[in-house]
Length: 444
Image (cartoon, one colour):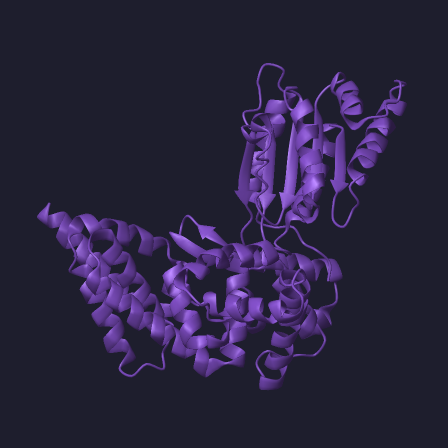
């Protein structure tokens, strides 16, 4: 399936602003190095392709290097070759070093450097990039854009790190998914492969806007697999696991460690945020074969998982460790489809745990635990007296003091995942929240 570029308005606005500043002789770029990072298949290379098109439109010379699977000497050779092509056209003397070549080109005007798959290189090559940027970045006419699965921090050169800005690429929203599928249908122009609204809803629900998963799912549907049938569902889920989990996320893991990573990431995808205490509790109850000898031994687990997969790290929005959102939804899909009883048992366990923690905590922590209790209750419709328990959980939150409820109201308004899980209860819950907010406003 061909790639389709949609819904990167935030990122392209940033690029357009940078280009305008770069071309303005009276202004300086505040952040001359941008890094776009995100999981495999989220659209990093496509974004760089769009930036390359901007270079064509603005007549800016650019250097494009993909570092995936390349040897350590590749960067220097590729940069020198590309720059010398520009110098040759201008009748200038050719250069033998990357730094020297780019400096000569910069004397002619602004230059854009695009480096893809930076994190797929070894440490030596990352340091080589860092040294290259150190020797060039003080030139006001250089603009560098990096793409990688994880954040590259350039810890050895403060002059480089100080001018680096990170941006996390996220999955597409529903309207962008529709645009994505519309463009794909226009490109292939095959009426028999048009995707109806029912299938589009399933694609979005299963992939949550993760472009690589959307590609694979559409491909599977066009191969005759209907996700509305049990057999079709199983084949599509198996294909998603093989193409994304096995071939992309876990490609750096081997043997028993690969199976361990898969099991642990699937389990740790159920909570929306984790700490080492929660990891130990979940692993002890649901993956005892991977239980560690002491609580202290769990402190290294996030690093071990992230170094292998690049999808499990500290999430500032969640106040805890979390699986990267696009991949997390895929793990949840696999878990629910392949092991539904265990999947709902984990939700039930987490609901009970967050309920207990909410009773023990105070202030904002109490509200945060209560919100996660509400989320896990809503995610497990198999619980007896489900609606009653969900509404009781909400009622306990709304009894909190107004100063702690205001952040809850704001977070709930942005929590699309919780709203989706609440489903049929959402209108009733939103009404209760509005009434409580109005009461607080009236009291004030």
